[in-house]
Length: 204
Length: 232
Image 1 (cartoon, one colour):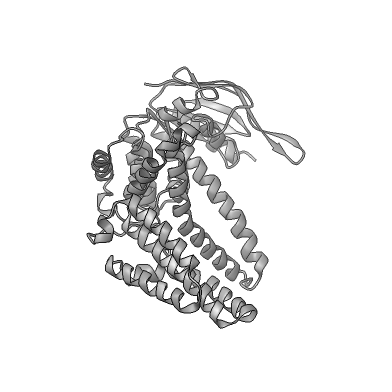
Image 2: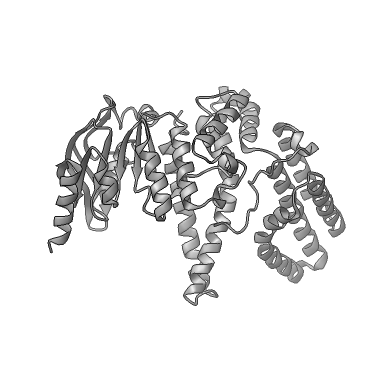
């Protein structure tokens, strides 16, 4: 059973963030992400993280869900922080880590307040004008939703791979951790393709 | 009842020492309501099953479902033939239980409200409605397999092909999933190692080393398979 649930999981609720339609919310997330990435300096980035957490609380997303969303990223963030501190000093390290956290928290809030079905409809609606250019909105929407759905699945595979390496006493071996992870992620993508194929989804 | 026909079908795959034959010269006409495919690991029975909705293409020969060629009319065949995999988690592609069933309904039910209500109906019929908002990965193996079956049936197939759907389940979940499968109105092609399940079918094919070595009543097929396993 999955231990962490980062992104992709809708948490039913009645908050104002749940009531905003998926299209405007997705556009808003895109604009906010651009602004957050454009911010310079450690303190604006920390403030952006604070705002993202405040919005999450406003949307009444349980703290546990947010923590579960962030937890898998902590190792990556710690490595990123250490590297940036060493290379470019603590202000850049704080800026990079806080910016990443703000984006993850904002994305978690978005997926926690937006049912996937609504998100698919919003993407299909938004891309409809591009149909005459050869874009298939249903396929793009499906790819988008699969990408979000794949994130928790990949974290799960990483967890299982680590456990398997640990069981053989190879938990410190990058090869024992990374090679099976890469192979299993590709296998997961293949399985997902077969599952869609088997249901006739994406044939049109 | 639908008709599945395999005419002189061979399936090969590229191996390190040239092509490997996975299935050889298979000819069969499947019209019964419940059909079992039994055989050892690597015998070719899963490849046989995957041919039926185009997950695998024949290297030679033809596979047709109600006269539609699987190779030429893939999308139309897949609308008729639903497929349930061994590993339940691998076939659940959306984050939550309700969203996974809703995905199957997107093509046939374009209206969102109607789709939500149909999704709940489907989940209720499988006793999964109370789990609708839950993550698909928080379900037990049995619940995942039922959800996978629900997702497949929501597409409205006339044939369900199930590839060892109970192999990874405990006894209780095996009984629940098997009873669901055998209660289906659709034609069922069941790949299984569970000889009790095979015996409940109307016809059984034994596959060994890529060939159909027995085709007939399930009891006789099971007996044939037991004898061949017992023979060194």
